[in-house]
Length: 71
Image (cartoon, rainbow, N blue to C red; front, side, top):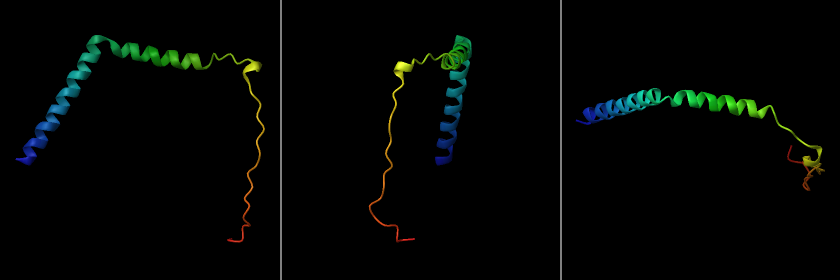
């Protein structure tokens, strides 16, 4: 009985994914997703960074107060 339930659940999941895939192909949203990815890649190369936007920072090294005698 338990094995039958698992098999039915797996068949339902496979059927759901198949229907979802077929509907995505028929609606044509697959081509829209590809164009979104291409636009995202093109945008990243065309960044205009002004020198005014760059902030310079000074960093200090953090020193341990303990002596490293544990080695």
